[in-house]
Length: 388
Image 1 (cartoon, rainbow, N blue to C red):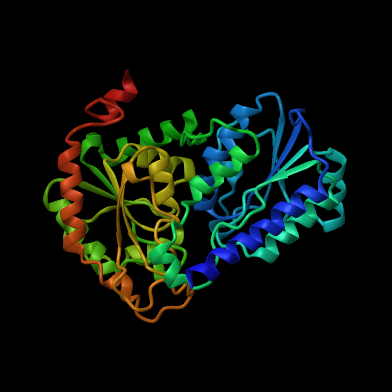
Image 2: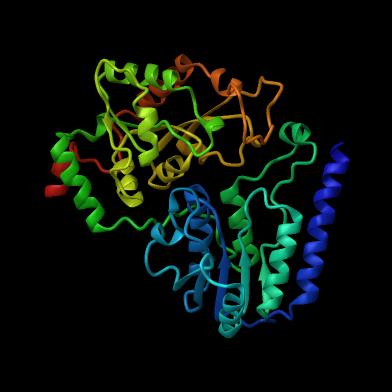
């Protein structure tokens, strides 16, 4: 079984490498002057690509760097909204462009280098299609045309194969494209002064001062099977309140339905639907920890260097979407027969229900104890830090 899996990866990637070599003339020793990155996906996909994009900008400071993308999928959160200005020169949203117009526009740009940042589960046929697209627009060189993971014998792969983390996979593509020193996980988030001012004023209104006592929660997720039971979140929230922490809930407007299911003695501060993405990042930056499902705000939290306690379903490969190890504790229940199901439909979320809130609370308190009062901002309160 393992031999078949490895042969499958090898042959697919071999075909893609050979076609990349045959179909494109290359640049020789010339550095690319115009680079096009193709990246799609939702918030988590975009955040995972930030270190790789940043590495390419560092490698090619004089190049014209553009990104072909869409409006952001679920919740409409686009990559353009998240990355600091000055790294990408232009974003091209292909969603509302007729195909002929898009091809004509890209051909006219005469890109030297086309870099594909594929989705983790992008099948061979889709990557091959994107390779043909790169050929049609007459780019000179390509990078990134390879398989990240397949779903062939997933149970064997989950147990025996080293599954690449998405961030590391994309960084390896940036190295293939010439960013040879792209080992640092830097997330150039677009947090502006206006976002900081907004959160300062919000915290003033809510009488929040002590940043060392803030814990954030994300109780929603795009896929229902990625959601830890709401009553489990309730137990953790009540415990954190009982030991003196102020609990904030971060999420989109649609998560208010889930928040209404919390029956708490002491109300939490519900910020769902009240913040932009970068305002959410600024709030998370001020928290000691985020306790979360596998969802976009999880990636946003570690991108601000905030510690993450993440509860993962068993539907996908372990490690593929995990936060950085040094900034996280991850809970995943592998003791279920249906692990690595990749299903978008689940009747009872048995894998998530098997993760006990008591275990999460124990790990949260252990980590908070280890971290003490350490903070990226040493000020005792955000009002003091703001008024300096």
